Length: 232
Image (cartoon, rainbow, N blue to C red; front, side, top):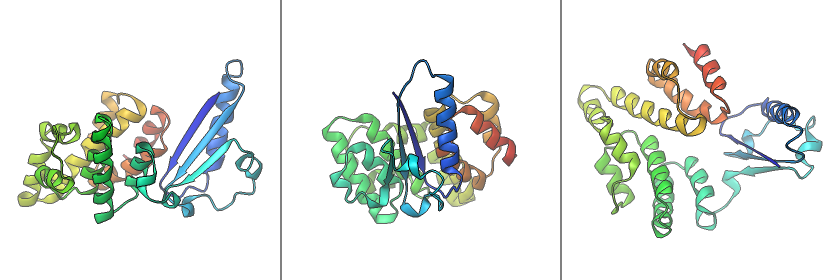
């Protein structure tokens, strides 16, 4: 069975055309190996779903496609850690902090180091104006320094943020956003090639932030290469 997942945090009227086209092409190429499929599409909110559902209604209502709207899931306390992480990405301000604290408590109880790292990474990205010490204090971290913060420290992001306060905040934000985007790309697509890495290094802060949103739709390295070609 093929399990195909899509996470959507921005409006894309062509989403279902692309989703089902990619699914059909994959099944065509692997027809001997697979004879069934299930699709899961996760939206930040219901208003991000394509407006016209008529063309794909039989597929969407057929039982093989499950659509999830994060803003309708209810309290994070009622969700698994995995879904809780997804909910954290759409939280803002104090709500994001409270959600992060809850997830960290659960992750510590279950010794889920990877979850701790991901929660910390998301918060670092959301609160780029805060220092490492401020983030640690805000989240109430009393454990071994999370990898996300340790990496930021090792990569000089902390220094970049401090310099940003005195020499221009944008430089620090750019370095932090760049590091986070590279980590997300490596996790989603595998290790990014030196050529693509060099091109990403040359992006402006606004372009890096745009890439951070768009990479959620990437499924292959080719998607990244096409994006870079259109933005350089």
